[in-house]
Every structure is written in C-alpha cells, then in structure tokens.
Amino acid sequence: MKRSEAAPGKRVLVVDDSAFMRRLITEIVESREQFTVVGTAGDGADALAKVQGLRPDIVTLDVEMPGMGGLEALSRIMAEMPRPVVMLSAGGSDFSNSLTIRALELGAVDFVRKPSGPVSVDLSAIRGELLRALNAASLARASPGSSGLVATTREAGTMRGERHADAPAESAVVMAASTGGPRALSNLIPHLPRTLNAAVLIVQHMPADFLRTLADRLAQVSALPVRIARHGEPLLAGHVYIAPGSGHMWIERRDGKPVVRMDHGPAICGVRPSADPLFTSAAETFGRNTIGVVLTGMGRDGSEGLRAVRSAGGGAIVQDRASSTIYGMPRAALAAAGADRILAPRLVARAIDNLFARRRAVA
Image 1 (cartoon, rainbow, N blue to C red):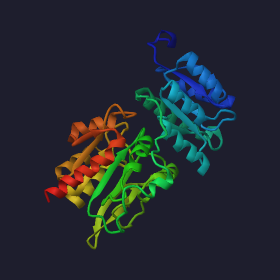
Image 2 (image 1 turned 45 degrees about the vertical axis):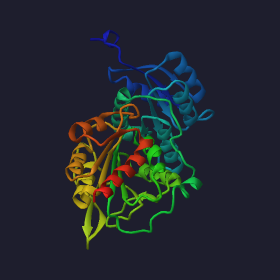
Image 3 (image 1 turned 90 degrees about the horizontal axis):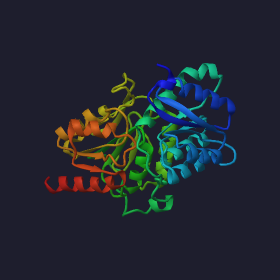
Image 4 (image 1 turned 180 degrees about the vertical axis):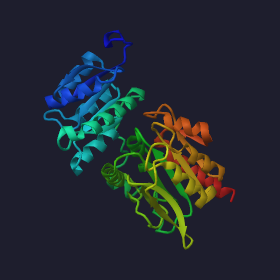
C-alpha cells in the first residue's frame, strides 16, 4: 500500500534552525509510515505560527535557536496549544544539558541528542533514538506546562523544620521514573520536608551526563541534599540519591549499616539502571519501613519491585493517569502490586509522611 493510501498517522512539525537538520529529521520521521511531516520551521516564532496553522500531533523542537529559542517556544506551545514535543539537544556541555532538563520540566516528552561529530557516524543511533522518542510522543498525554519547580533555593533551605542530623537510614523511599520523569520529580522532590527521616533513592532512565544535571537542578529546589549515588557510600536519612546511568543500584548492609551497591549487570526490563533491583533490595533491607513510588514512563520497570515492597509490608504509591506523561509504568505497577495511594506527584510527599506515620503508630 502506498503512503498516500495508508491510514492517517501522527502528523509531525520539524523545527530546527539548520536546513540540513530539518532535511535529516524529516527523512528519519518519514521512514516510518505512522509519521508524516506536515511542515518545518526555522525558529521559535515560525514554529508557533506553524503549530497554530497546521495543528500537528507532535513537534520536534531544537533546544538552541537564534531569536525565539526552543525553551520559549516550548513554554508557549505548552501554555497555549499543548501537544507532545520532542526536543533536539546538542548536549555535551553543562549549559546544553541544563537547557534540556529545563525543557523536560516544562513538559517536553523526551529529547534526542543531535550529531556531535560526523553525521554518518551518529546517524544510526540518532535514527533509533528519534524514532523511539516519536513513539513515546505518540503515546503521550500532553497537558499545559508549568515550571515544575515549586520552591526557590532560598525557600528550600528553610522548609518545614530542622533537618535530621546525618545518621544511617532506618527506612527508605524508592522511586522509579522514565519518560516524563524529570517533570514529575521537579513537582515532587521540592515538597519533601527537611524532617523526612528516610533515605530517598531514585532510578530515572536517562543518559549519565543528563542525570548529573538533573541532580543539580533538583538540589537547587530541595530541602534535602540531592546527589548522584556512589558505590559503597553509606545511606543517610534525609538525603536523596539518584542512580548513575552506568549500572543498577542496590541497597545492602555492611557492618550493619545500609550502603549503596552498584553493578553493571545486563539490562532488566530493557533498561539499565532498572528500578526493580533497587526496590527489591530496599524491601529486603528495610522491610515494612520501605515506600515504593512508581512514576510516569513506558514499559513495566518497577512493577516487580513494587510487588516485593508490598510483600515485605511496605507502602506503595503510583502516579495517577491524569498527571502521567505516559501511563505505562504506573499501570503495570498497579496490575502487579496494587497501591496504597494513586496520586499526582505534587501530592506524593504528604502521602509518604502519612504512610510512615501509620507504620510508626502500629510499631
């Protein structure tokens, strides 16, 4: 069947200030019959006009452009004409990475690295990543964007009481996030109180250099210290640890104290790091003093781990459908384990407090 005779698929607007990149992206997009490029734009202002006039289902948007840049265009799109957006990022520098993380906080579904060297070398990887991101965007629920960051750095330093002195963790909150995760985390982590007497450990599916930028962003607005976890470091109450992108993160005890363990075993559920080892090892280490949180994302990572948490007597929180960019991971977790709470990210911190309080009350 010819493309013109095929059932209508997702209509894509390609936005990039480089004519070469517009051609390349168009060729990749149209290599799959379920996507059709309905137009291109060379800057943010042109993109807004094309979104309004062409009403595409998905937009691919360059992060850095002269004039109206990608972030301003994205903010306008999400506020005025919300739809799934995939960002194209140069990456490779702290500045570029920071812009990309900010785009995800504003509501972009995903991002793809642009070629960093000869296009012929990067083309295969770029093609696969772009088609994967477009597939995610085709399943995504777009909602009006917000900054995602609910507290300033100064406010985060004074939120809700004095932070516990550093002490070995006796309980843990473990979180799983994928597509849409940076936005969900930016709406969740700033609400965690300084008085939280648990270690918080997060698996977010994302390349390692972007994870470092995400950790820095969250640290600016969190009442708790946030950093990339390191193999062998002790787990302290009131600290937030993000798994590096290089391997799976586990919890184990050494000399009776909980520590982080990293390994480079094969992917689980198609991803590395996977949340399942983290959740399972947390349940084995802390038992009923564990709370598992499964946030937005494709696939089923975290579902078996959440079942292990509940089997150990721990609590379970799953992101609701309405606030999820992609409901795959939350839906799989609910099917496998059920949940004590089904909530938007901004409400999760209070639910964590309540679930720990219930456990203290019956101790």
